[in-house]
Image (cartoon, rainbow, N blue to C red; front, side, top):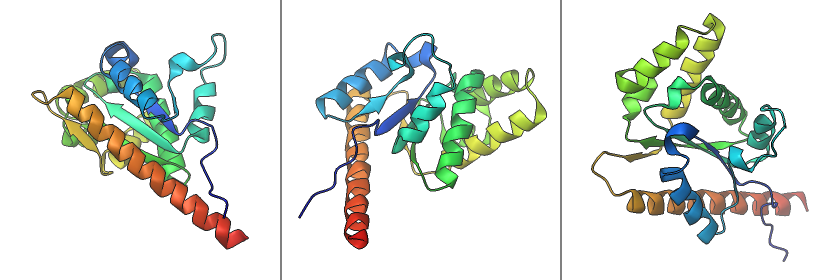
Length: 186
């Protein structure tokens, strides 16, 4: 019996506010991914000079999107546009999303309140009505998924271990389904 594995494309796409998390939390998370052989994509891996829309292709190639909501996530129109693309793939059943609430409350992301909401509404003042509605819908949709939360007084090291365990569980589930689908076809 041939065991199906996931193709060597990015298994996990990370969406996060780079200015805030790239050289701290995300750098430690990526180190854990490498130790556990989880294939991932982050924007710094893209060739310079390419269009930013190439990131949308990377979302399409991925099996899981890990959206790391932080206090500054909603201040970036690029993060918000990524989130809209992620939500569209999730709605089509082509992508699984795991929201990570990094020192923000899920209810603040969902309702665009608190510090998270302040950043969102400041960005919304410079944006179009249709775009704002898409962003709000994507925030509500993704933040309503089962996710993982890190509080202010929690261990980031333990939280990273929890994220890795969850990703491995979801990837195993995807592999299992791919194997079942393969056997149904043959």
